[in-house]
Image (tube, rainbow, N blue to C red):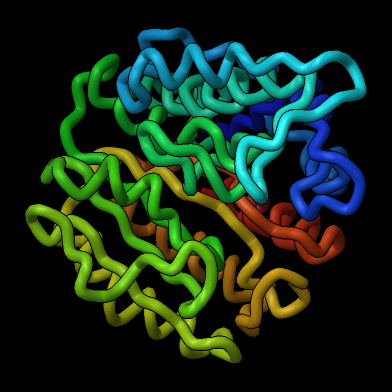
Length: 310
């Protein structure tokens, strides 16, 4: 069984402007790293556009239509909020980013791949059903989870988020549904200011572990190993989806955790072990944050290498 890489050139056409941290060079650095001969064994495909049916399993139709209707002229940009920008190429990019996550789910659920990595932008985990923000417009991982339930007939889907920022958009989708599970480590206090350990969901299906600035890899591993992974094991997911944000890395300029690349490798191995026990090894990973180009490229490369060894 192989690992699938899903991406698309349109992701580079989402132009956030000069000096914006969520810039096209992020994805260029990732794709350059994955072009190394060591990744020759990856299956590769271009991301399709998500359908309206797929998008509206998470986002109201009027919200989807409003986002897709933002089409500034070439070279111009529209500020959606203080951090979130759309350009002429953004509507296609956001639709294909969600489509990449959906296609990854289809591949692992039909046995065409065992694991998948969606190298996308813009990211998605801050997008609530009707509110964009934090660079995010559609919630790629939530759309993927709902697609797995609707199209493939599984019930229990886990979304695991190690981005340094709490994925409040994903949590908003998960917390009222006992068949979804969301877990997050994230720096606190930090944008978006959510993710208290007291936020537990309707059935204990949300597990948040806020981490103070300066938290190192050992305490990061303890948070997952002692607090989150046992709850995930109890949930017995039929599919594991990862919000793979690498901005908890010590080199990242947007936050203050001290996680290293080796810690992401360890965590990926733990996810794969639980997926082997409960989900026939099925893991879909979707790129979220990570803003130091070298640390991002290295972290993604080792993350995908670990997926390929499964």
